[in-house]
Image 1 (cartoon, helix red, strand yellow):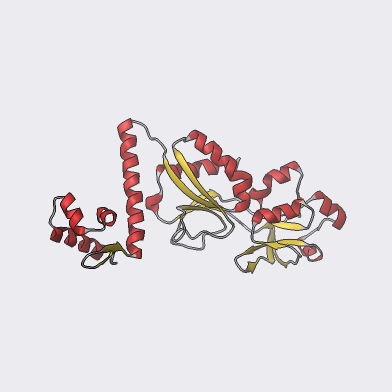
Image 2 (tube, rainbow, N blue to C red):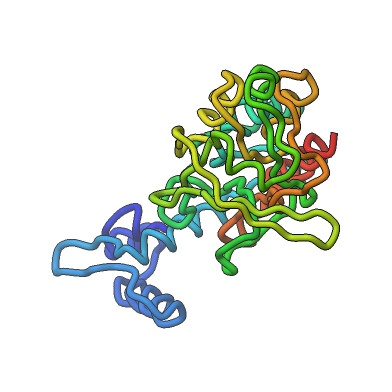
Length: 286
C-alpha cells in the first residue's frame, strides 16, 4: 500500500528504514505469491497494473475492517460504521429501500450509504459498488449470496380500471388476449411468463405495446391502466394492500424470485454488511 501511495520503492525504503533492494524483493515475493504483476516499473517511474489496482482496493478494505474491529474492542462496544456502496433494483429501491435505509442509518448513525438504483445488473467487480440486491438465483457462482427474502415470487397485477374495461383473466392462457406490460433486461424482452399451480406448469408467450428496462416504469403503466404486469411481489405489496393494483390469477404462482444481497468476497462481510443483511431480512418478512 505504501509503495502504491508514494510511487517509489526508494521512498518507501527510506520511510520504513529498509534498503531499496529489500523493499524490491518484498514486492517481488508478494507478486510471486499472488501470481500476477502488481506494478509496471521503469528507471524513474512506478505505477500499478490493473491487477495491482484491484489488489490495492481489497487491501484497503481489509485494513479498514481491521482498524474498525480494533477500535470496537478498544471502546468496549461493537460500533457499526463504514461506507456501504449498494446497487438495487429501481422499483424496490424507490418504493421501499429508500425508507428502509433511513431507518437503518438512524439506528447506525456512523454508516454512510452510496446507493445506485438501476435495473441493469451491476457488475460488482468493475463498478463502484461492493454490494448488490438482486432478484433470482445468483447466475455467478463466484459471488457470495446472502439471502434476504427467499420466498418472493412474481405475480400478475393490473389496475381496477383496466380489469373493469377489459375483463379479468381466469388463467394465464387468457393473457394472450390482453395488453401485457413487459420488462426488458439489456436487449432481452421478457415475453415468456412462467406459472405453476399445484403440479401444473404453464409458460405463456405475451405481447403488448409497452416495454421498458425500468421496473418502476412498468409499475406506473399498470397503475395508469395500460395493461397487466408481471412483477416481483415485494415491489408491489403496498399497492396490492391499498387496492391500487389487483392480484390477477392468484391461484397461479409466478416465477420464483428470491432476493439476495450479493457480495464479491467474504472478506467484505464487515459488521456493517451483516447488520444490513439482518435489517433487510426483517423488513422483507414484515
